[in-house]
Image (tube, rainbow, N blue to C red; front, top):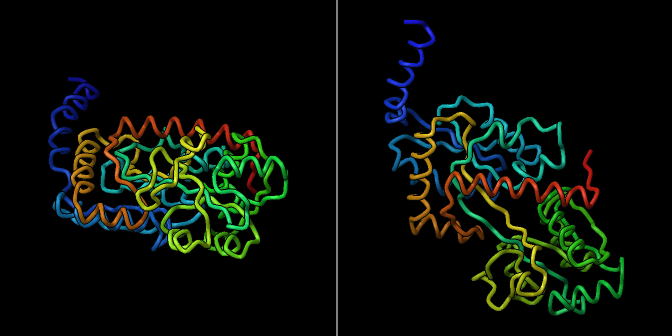
Length: 320
């Protein structure tokens, strides 16, 4: 028998058995952002049930930096055996490729295998109460009547809330000025101090300020209303369909990881996300669990890559 034919026969004979034995040693779960971040919270919430279900330790490693690129690149370049997996998010997987182009260290579609969506978290559109607008439509009308008067804050150029603001500007056909900060907390501080007037933010960091009346929530930038903010409509309900900006988090593996391993990980992920204690931890982080598997995750990535490329190109956003 020729060597190539023998190799193929051996691969067919022993490949599935190897996948059935998975996992036989500890698994690294790369969180591409710092400890305490939403990604870190989700990773640690999942690591405990996954360890029990898989019968091997799932060890969280924080590898932050470069907007999540460093950690995701570690997953992309890891052996294709399922022992190094990670959490991929909106930024490094779909926004950063549009921002950095050829400078990206990995190709999202070529180098990564989607395992399943973990959760999603919508933004909320906030204004300082000094802005004479109690609805999204009133904000649009005020901005049109006063072009360039309102400022919207973000946690930095190319951040999700920056792109949410640019998308809002484009769809509403208004002129508001972008003011980037080094992080969401700095942007929130200046919004509370009335130095800026508009901010898109995740719900948990701003919930207390909304309830106290220090900030006004005009719309949820997601497909469904938020249980934490009853009475606040979605952007579509408020008359601006297409302005949804949802941060999503998914389990990823290196491209080429055997499909039986991907399926096993997806199945165990679904079991972990169904546990009440995990759902409680996600809710505290402002995230809603998902049941989307590899194919649905792949479609989400395609849609988001196309969307953010268009938003970034239309807004002429550039990073150094």
